[in-house]
Image 1 (cartoon, rainbow, N blue to C red):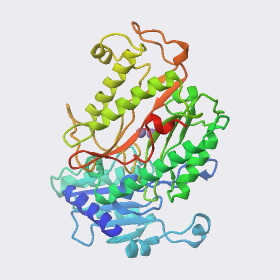
Image 2: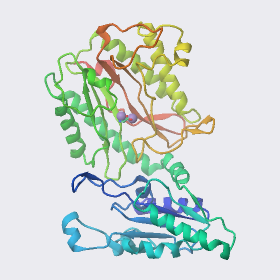
Image 3: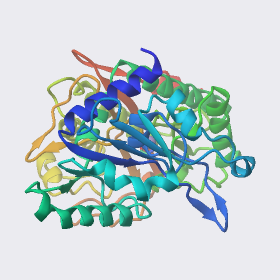
Image 4: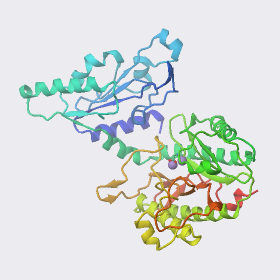
Length: 439
Ligand code: GLY
Ligand code: MN
Ligand code: MN
């Protein structure tokens, strides 16, 4: 399917689910880094998913209460040579009409005067309150004006709903185009992990490896890292969101690298590998690594239609706890340890999350009291780990930890697609078996 058809298909599904509600979906804005310098632009994923339009500040309207040919309206930054000299090319209204399949396009500064008319006749507004502080006052003002008119014009509720349940349910299930993009994002990420492991040597700095892996993302055509790359040696690996990446890597250290690329259309990889920088695991490192790998493989086996992400987590957790009891780092009955969360000083996060246009992608995990069933097209990470340090107190009744275990942090993370009958590991190009990690 041509790419423009993909966005059109999504818009049609979205419009059909909106009923007679008019949806307002804003693009992202530039974010200040410091003073008057901005971060590189990153489009809002909901906006991107529906428009494929990669400029800041635009606003898309979806108007199912209007006739065909007037249902998709885009407000965009106008073409303006003086501004484009500084910040680059803009499509403008003509480009939006010619290249983005919109029904009607306007310059952004006309939004305040035109929005009210476009909402006329809708049953209500679908807009995510609380996320768009610059636009929200205008939307609330126009909503209030419409409510003011209601007693004279009828008894429609004209309520405000969130578009997210519709959109995020759509984004949770990836179609064949998206799956192919996710395969590419994971493959590039995995190949970069392979290269950086080959490159790593004791005495290097963590940032040497960060530079190497991010260079590889760019060389392979990705936009860049999907999130702040974590390159953590030794005890740094016990800091879950470590991004300082500035320690020298000592002989005997494990290196934990949690890094993935983002493609130009924002699909992401999210992979963690942990390996011995000198090519040889110590006894303690190996014992822990084997427990985590076994837990991860067992959890991945649960990724299939009809199972659920909760069970993926619980399966990994049970294997981790059993393994930690076996080597004496936890003590007692496995069920009781899990129930009392007496493992949480060693494993303090969940085993995964949805993956897609956002790294921690949208979509529910539960429907009320019940975990959501996995379905073909869903993509999730499976990422158990163990982190042994003095940062968290050992819970009462659990054994104190011998010094020889401390400063070891290990996580293994893969990106897994639910297929018709089972699953596909999208990140399988990154080695994780012990024999492949030892030199
Ligand atoms: N890299 C972020 C995560 O694994 O969730
Ligand atoms: Mn992850
Ligand atoms: Mn990760």
